[in-house]
Length: 122
Image (tube, rainbow, N blue to C red; front, side, top):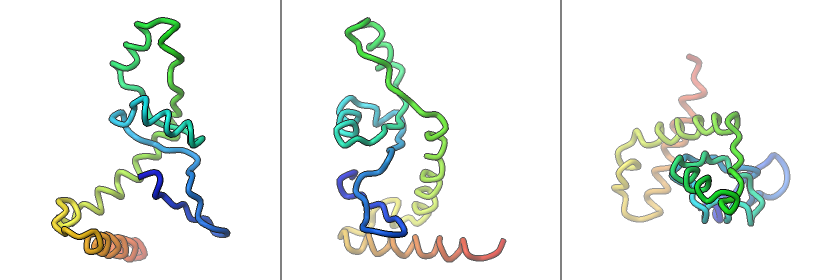
């Protein structure tokens, strides 16, 4: 998924490398972290307790503890809430649309509806 990401800024072409990636503990594998390190992307992923225990058990051969920015990790909540709002549509949550084009159309439509609703005064 990270290879297809495009970050749009006000000027210039879209960037393909974000500054940081925030994820939950399920994505705390060594492979994910090494991929992000190769691409020079900061990993904001907390370490699983069993991974930390295994690292500590190995002593000095276990490596350094992973760096974790708790303030940046708190911003992940915004993306999670947006995904939950998108998945309020059953068709998007359960993937009823079988073709990628129709699923993407539904995703764009849901995004447009959420955007229009955000413009209304509360």
